[in-house]
Image (cartoon, rainbow, N blue to C red; front, side, top):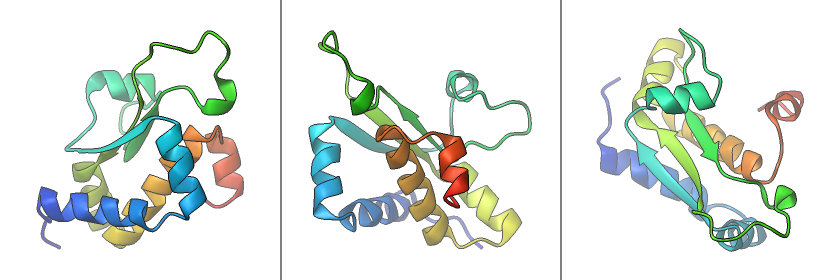
Length: 127
């Protein structure tokens, strides 16, 4: 498998976002969430996610889920979802997983975190 260009990868992520049901897309927009493609996570991002040595981080949600925002939630930067191109490609190459399906799962997983769904519950649901 050859690595796709960043532009191709970004289009794949955009396709997942474009395919969201209208009500979810509207909630993301209301929630002030940005989705970006990055090459790889920084050391700080790995640490904030609790990713130990040898752990692969495919995506990361950084922010405060709307359900946890209180009356003092103001003047904050937008929430951010990072999708990491190189780790996803490496994971797919090593596991034989389909890149487009993996991107879809990672994007939906991180969106679920924005809506306050923790990893334990996502595992129960098969994500």
